[in-house]
Length: 193
View 1 (cartoon, one colour):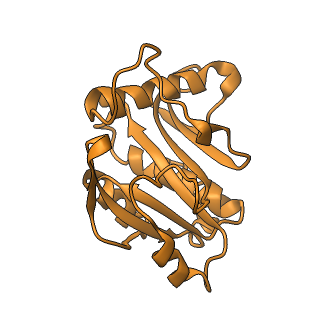
View 2 (tube, one colour):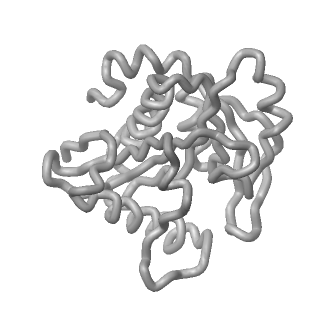
């Protein structure tokens, strides 16, 4: 299956597919919240001024969304992963080197496409390259233990103690990653196969 990695096109109905895919991954599979009648996950962070909504589109041009990732500007007081981990101490330690911080969240791959080798890596690298191109030099995220290796392959490191957020039925690993190496990837297209 040919899969294209790019920004979500709202006019093509792709954001709705992305929101429904998140629901399947985070509510139906991982049980991270109660079922809802609309069967979509959309929150206020989807409307940030600076936002990357990366999508994996299966089947070429007119295909369906088969994965997604979101990168926002990190705000200490209000960010998509604030419930999981307080990055205050870690960000103070890297403040001299990194002044523009991004936060990654909502990474998922459709169950039918999880066997596509390297798809999650391509999606994550796309978001990181877009954040780097926008001037962000560092990203933080609360990774599930199953996705920890993905972040490490991108250069990420564990930045605090592992934990569990019972309200979301989720274990997590707080991680950070220098985005500066991704500037080159953006220039040579991080999404080429």
